Image (cartoon, rainbow, N blue to C red; front, side, top):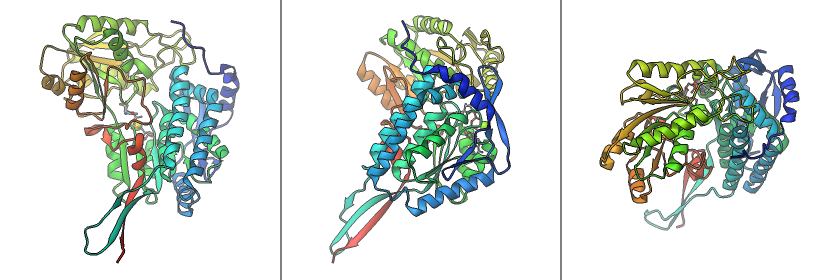
Length: 508
Ligand code: NAI
Ligand code: MG
């Protein structure tokens, strides 16, 4: 298959790199770029080489405070929240256009920073971000309430209205830095909130570009503020800030729990989009030509660094060998390499820490009796010796209770299990045997069976015969159990940035 033409203008790469090397990226507060008050910066590493290629301001409590004050002032003034909704929508649409006009710079930055293949940087970072902005811009004019007739004696009228929750702290991880930051921001902005965004310390750069475009799009000062920095400093300061009304967090379940505790100070609202250990269930009647690549790319895509990754494969014993063979062939055939190489289908892991974590899980699986069917080793990539590359990996002889079966690995490592002609309850029970409940995939040509499985699986998302390649801004995204609180995307996502007010009127 010939790949589609590369939509990214890679000729700008040398200038982009020179610019990144020349000066540290700054914080974006109240419409201006400023260094951290401490003057501190931190190194940004290209995971394909292990080399430092940029610096970013290391925001601390003082910087977070300034950013929150700017967001507070903007919110309280009504400059954004009271702007006519249609006008807010137009500014958001303008930002979507600016993102597309800067597509090459954003995609290349995302690839340098995170390691993802450039095509994914383009479609997964740039195009997904502009689409989510447009989708959410549409909500500005559609958020409303309900009317009621209260049962009190006399004549009454009751209604609800939705008001923006206020100042939002958005904390974003490193696996899809740009689109996740934009999605949180877009939903908050549609609701009329202002926001302080904190990208992950591993991948601060594309979000800084967002700051530039926000300045250009015509948002009132302070509507969106961006503080780069570490979780323990910038992140913690944002979460603890008394003037922040809501935290929207995406990241690990461990950090999510810390955030919940830290938010008790002013009982700020919290939504959490956390980890997963999502099952992929392939029945013996499945269309394997569809199921096999979906299962493979569901775990190897973005090197498995995807919250909704299908990391536990349950396959009917009748088709087990065929599925395993197909997934193995894909694992062997995937070109692992620098995201900048147009031939690469899987980039490096984001950091040395993530590399150690993923290889640690593979070792633990082996020590618990699992076998590596394919992969399992550092991938050697010519010209990228310092990169954090790992081979796409399939484990067999994996059983419930093993660390690699229970815990989120966040790498391209698939645990495989089989089932026989069991009833659906038994199959669903095995799939549900996890602390997580984010996503699930079911492959069967029997749609009734697919729908019955969808009813029985305890997760926020279920895909039948395919996932469509990524989240859709219209479809709620989030988890049951320890995969999170609340939903992003869709109506639910925007409403999560609002408070409901009941107004009761006596007409007597
Ligand atoms: P993390 O959850 O610690 O980091 C995510 C974000 O939270 C970053 O922006 C970080 O700076 C911030 N943060 C960290 N500690 C904080 C605190 N105390 N208060 C406020 N903000 C804080 O994830 P980490 O350590 O980078 O990755 C470890 C593992 O977490 C991964 O291997 C993966 O299993 C999981 N993870 C899951 C993600 C998902 O989308 N489900 C995304 C990222 C990580
Ligand atoms: Mg961390």
